[in-house]
Image (cartoon, rainbow, N blue to C red; front, side, top):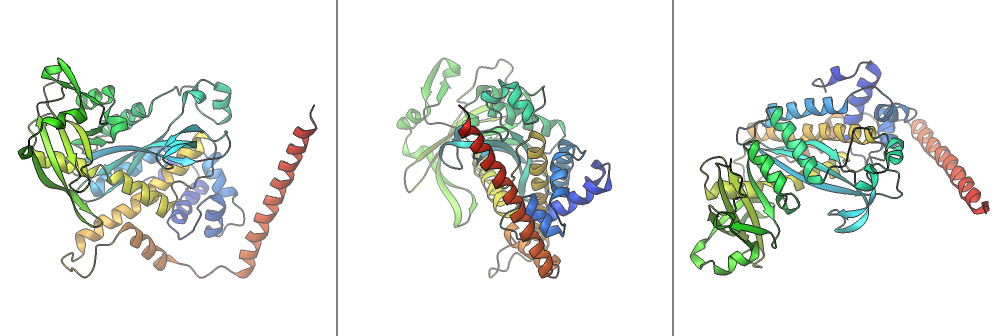
Length: 422
């Protein structure tokens, strides 16, 4: 908290931010402003709601501070920037960015809000360091709707790949120690993103779809990725681990086609290649377009391909441990503020995990390393305050029911008004 306390001009929002992050680390089932206020000992949720809505502070500046704290603890010259998106299912149409769209969270088209996130991963650990809310064209083309949600006038439509590019470019500009970028096929298929990564001199291992057309013979011909494997001999495959998993090393069969897949950029002096992964049980194939500014080995590319999954682990920890998906806010600023404070809470867990890993005796085979889940539990064990009084709990129960009664009356009055209209 000390890293970004100076971003708050007044002491009240500074204190509210501290207890907000502390509440996100608490063992609450739901982590909205109501629950966080009750956890903090407030009589009403006003302070928490004001922090997300009206208080004067720059969420992007706090994001930069959190990112720097993460790098100071987890930074590695061989770091990897991993980008991916996650969706939150929503009702209604007023929450910023909401529309019917595909989200991997549900695995289908749903009424949802989608956020694109950036993870920093190194040998010491990984955590989320940046975020962007995706605004579909149905939003950016409706300026009145954007104004109601507090979207700044200068925000124009940007694809998810462009949002990913913005975050990676910002990380490089901030001198974040990273040598590689990784992403799934939704981003790997994007020609512009690959070109921008090469301009930034970031090596990449980007997944592409099986029907992705790969340039061959210096770009003279193109062929589907899945058809390339037909002619590969048995000796072209080698078994390697993509890193440790929850059930042991993740072994796959890999084929590496060097000097394949150049996009035809005349200023490109790097090494292009195509990496193919085969599940040795099911035979399922995955394809990656790879580039490095200098010589590279198969072992390096396999390691980066395996690191891509850290963003999924970050999403799981963010949602399960610090309530990343539990924001009940509608406006642009509120989403960025809540998400930024959630990133701060998640960074605390990631940094603690890295520090305890470096100090513990990890040779003990009877005990696993401390996980972010266990660290959050221990934080709550050691900082747990005596239980609140019965009158305090009853006060909050009464407040919630009164608020819900007012909301019910308002909804019924609006519905009856609509029904009576000709």
